[in-house]
Length: 117
Length: 114
Figure 1 (spheres, rainbow over the protein chains, first blue to last red):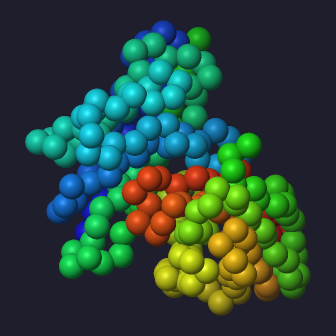
Figure 2 (cartoon, each protein chain N blue to C red; figure 1 turned 90 degrees about the vertical axis):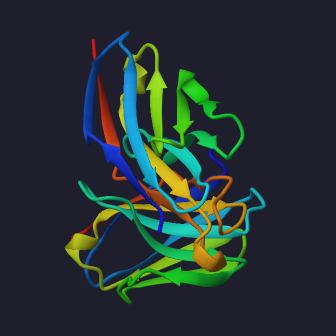
């Protein structure tokens, strides 16, 4: 079965510094991968998605993620953090189950990003 | 506006009350979901509906009762809840139940059980 591991439940960066949020997935078949962002008391908003096209995916708000099959990773990056990037970020994977079984999104536990002035 | 609207945004209810959460989407999606998000816990998938048919029920207590009258509307009926049921309840929809194109989430209902 597919699963997602987000390394680090909390990440803190300075404004203007590189943001790197880590996500590793486990899937026996080619995955569909997603990053979502959640601001306080809001729902989850799609940042970007990988659907087997280009391995470097660009999303909203200057974020991007690179699919690395050999490392089973889909890390999220942004060159320069803004205060407005402070939020919780969720990685998710969707893959066809074995024998054509049920497919759905499986979410990681989330990484809370703090941006310091 | 995300395309998925949840009402109410906030709800406080006593343990003996009966209330309902509403979710509405006009994105033409065929699958809808209820999630529970508690503090310091991962997102918990509660129910999945595909073409108005419940396709997944993740061992949710019977005090939570979902209803999907059509592909645009999803309800979560609540009765005799416990304080530990206090959480943010999120509704989501997707093109189909595979979720390959991603989910669209509503803003959630913040439920407090007193």
